[in-house]
Image 1 (cartoon, rainbow, N blue to C red):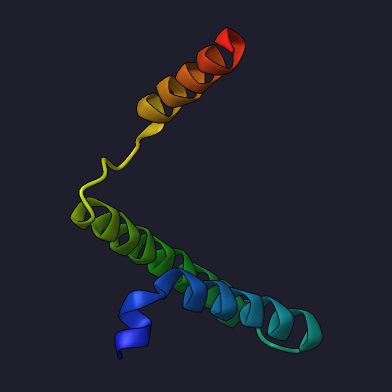
Image 2 (image 1 turned 45 degrees about the vertical axis):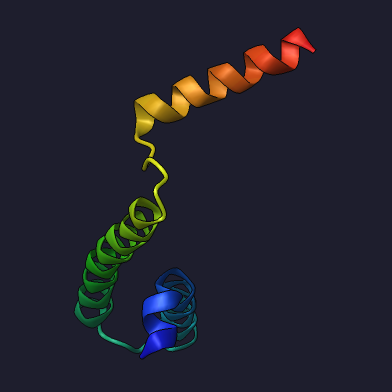
Length: 83
């Protein structure tokens, strides 16, 4: 259980890749089943994102949003140009 709480993004990526492979190699699966799994995977992705954001916040680093990410990129570009 410690591994799951420590690496949710990696587990999520493996699960999504496995789902894609199964959907590709088993075309006889009902479309409704595959679409239901895709919807569930999207929900789990949101939970994984929140877990990762929580880990970042617990580490004492600000969680970037789009505005902060743009400002950070502009700051990095300005520093690179000044050198």
